[in-house]
Image 1: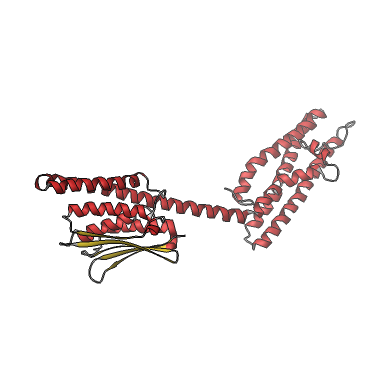
Image 2: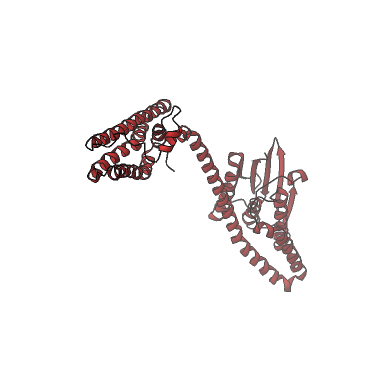
Length: 372
């Protein structure tokens, strides 16, 4: 959330370390006042030690933050950040000597008492354990003076790149889910209208043509068996081209009965291509457009064909009709926009949808997508 050696990082860090520095100053003064029976020295020693503590924990990080906001080239910035932390370490050690020297001055006014300064408070045990060559207070100043932030700072570019990549993946997934939702909502809006029209057709046929009414009911049942699983699950599980073709075939059979048998259905998809993955709710949208905008407005027989071919790891799926042709309008525009969005979000530049007119009349919708 907060980049190392940024102003936001420095301010958040100040809320943590400044109270510690002030407690250090108060504790130092309390040790002197009660240990030496010099309560009058408490206020001034607490002020000096507290101010020194604030400088100790702030000098290095403040200098490093200032270096970062100069906006130097990365290599120079990293070098100068390390130099700033080293300067801050020198300043912190100087502040420690200044506080101890001032304490010695106060001790000089107390005859009979030792003038030896106390070991750094809270870290005396650590200092004693590291007397093999390292000064305990120095290690403490390295830790509280920004040294711990140096590692995440040096790894910042890599972590930011990984975070941005993760955000892009999340955004693509969100867009894909949104496209799935729009397709599902569109399908849910179409289905009731389609079912009501079909049932109305059955009702009118019961008296005039009972045999055709029964055929319509059978075709509707077959269609619902094929489509209900897709309505419950719009994800990619079991989403193959074969399943989508079967759904479209059932739909066209039902519409053919409703329209008096004037739709010639052509399915040209091999078994090998049927087994390939294919997003749900895309092919049926193109077939519905062919029926609504191609077959219904044109009197007489019409042909709707679904064909698929595979070449060089690219699948080409075609839905074409010889009907009235696709007339631009908000209804088909929304459906086709959702199809394009779903293809784009799932496959990026590896998939496309083209809608073209046929020379002899009608419309041809072509989906091309990579299979790997």
